[in-house]
Length: 454
Image (cartoon, rainbow, N blue to C red):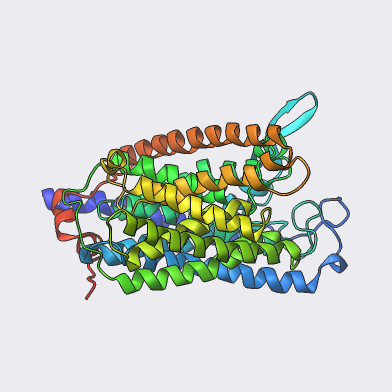
């Protein structure tokens, strides 16, 4: 009887999940078709589309999509052999979950008509109206006047979707080897709706609070993607607690090298594509991206060596990714020589955090906070120091801009950490987050998916 009740309890969760995807699929049949409204002032005419921009953003969107499978190899190679498949799937499954969520409501919440408050007659947005573009209605081939004036609006929406996909996937490295798959799916949906979309709106929507009031410069997602994922990772590691056996040998270093290469390659779309045009900003972002990563990779392995640690392939890969993270917010705002320093500084600080004994007490399995969270913080600070333009940063007369960035950094940190902490608690109250001790012992590949890595 006990086994039967347990089966019914587990079965109900999956029945509900299947019911949701069924409703969404049939809902798509009855939703209004794509309609463009060129006479409302929101969209431009089709002749404003620039073919070169369309070609580049199509390619960039594909590059960003490649980053999520790259991340699955990067993370999968680092965990123990009993958890390779589960860890890789946690990244890969975001391509399914978040893509559907983005079409149904995520894009509307991120880039829909701004909902917020007014101060002295000026509107500051917190989140988008969920009824702006549900099921991608009104997301068609015409360019959007304010957000993507030379490419079809649907291409802009799909490009941004790839950013939404990889963000929750980044979090998974913090609670690898001990999280229930169904619980993670629920948390991923809640995180995307309540953390990612409002942060995305506040930073990247023209009416967003952090953009319009604080003047936050985030060219490609250092704040929106990496800081949010980093602080959510820290909260997740704290809520799920330490693994029973926190020490393991990485299962496959070549996977880590392959994943790093895929991430580095895809990051050109992530950063240079965020110019939303085939222009000078895209070219500069392309250059700063690869140089910051190269600088961070070399800094990491040399810093390891002078501290008595071996020069390792794993360290080189982690350093390269930290450089990519750190340059992301400023990639289109700083010069290539400055990107050398940004990669160097971020590698030193992240390396110190990875090896900080106080932080090691929190079992962040793959050091997501120390790499992505801290890398994002360093990127935000150094962008506010070096960004070019009159009064654009601390070194260019923008003391007020720098102060606003620091205030925004504190607000984003509080919002993403405590917001994620609450969502973990809510998830755990609905479906227990952590696997049983027996399931953890046998490994998540077998206990969650009945598959094994050989």
